[in-house]
Image 1 (spheres, helix red, strand yellow):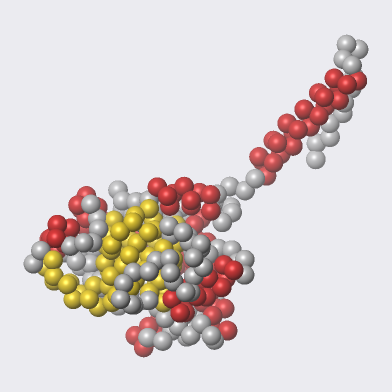
Image 2 (cartoon, one colour):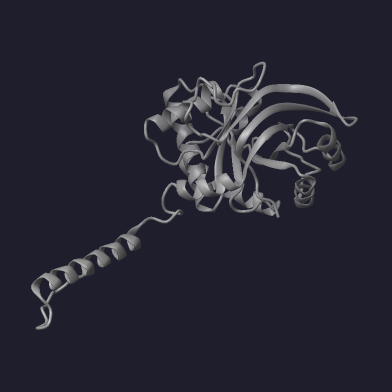
Length: 292
């Protein structure tokens, strides 16, 4: 540490010398504090996330569907449906629809130009105690932190290739699992936190999708326990008669304000503008993708 040696000049009184010394020490301490202060990349990124999330926030109705719809369907639904946001399963080894023939950078750019808000969803490895039979083959392994970091890197790289820019929210999809299994829940949370860290460090906002009664409840418990590296936004699935963004029992009413999506209905067969899709319905008050 630098040491300051104070000397008195003949023309300076003792009182003035003390004032000068105090000012010099204050300046030095402020400079040291600035030097040592963590940057947005080094801490949890909340201040940076607040600014970005506020700028990219979308409030309205959105749908998601397994296969990325053709552009003519997106055009028809933009004119005729109540939806203004679309969830896109853009990457991850756990996707049910792995082959996305319509999805590329041009598609993302064109739907954005139509006025759609894009919610990118990454379906990677799943909890070791996942319920769905079709997810059993993509379970998190015995190195959840390493695996979470690797898949976080993949999530960012594949988003960038689609023209989804830094500052975008990327939503990690974990299907329902047995969160009462302590060992499994611990492995799952380690994976999620590592994924979040990697996504944050690369300049994106980590979001999290899961069922309200498993993944979302566990994340809320982790928040209450003071855990770090948690999602910037929560997308919870609880299918009921209508949207209830801030009445969800699994979440404290003040947690994730303007960072929530409620998937409130699933497998809804809808036709708009003569184009039919089977979709899940969502109420959104959360950050979306930056395109272009």
